[in-house]
Length: 198
Image (cartoon, rainbow, N blue to C red):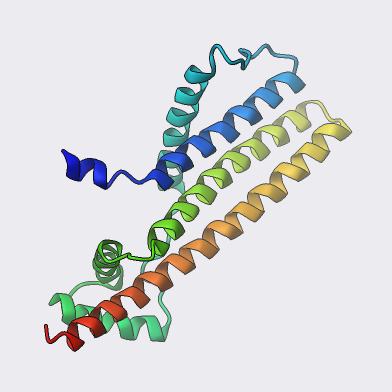
């Protein structure tokens, strides 16, 4: 049982909560703008809202897993050289680049002394969730703007769309950081094992 909780990633749990919280706040603003009643936030019901935000964060990340697929076969030449070394290391000569990268990721995660892989993955997940939230928000505002056009809605649409684009760029950047760090960690592990005579 302790092994399960030792793998419980605090970064991920906070990420679910933050994604769900932003989604709830936007829903609250949307309901206010369109004069629809929304349950109040107060200290009495705060624990309930924390649970709702956490659950909503999980739902949003599940949607993100379906909608956002990273290309795990799109590696540059230097990355492919490392993956070729990894194929020999893991004795998976017929493995695709994506499969070999997954093995590198598991090894690097186990050897992640600095915590960078864990934090890059958490940031990637956080920005991916926020991108989904603001992309959906932009679509909803665009639909409402077509239904009843006014300047505040246009401004809100622009802000939401720009925010979605910025978060998309951030999620892509952190995926690149994560991918590079995984491959670098694999190289370091391999060098250390060679030096220790394994």
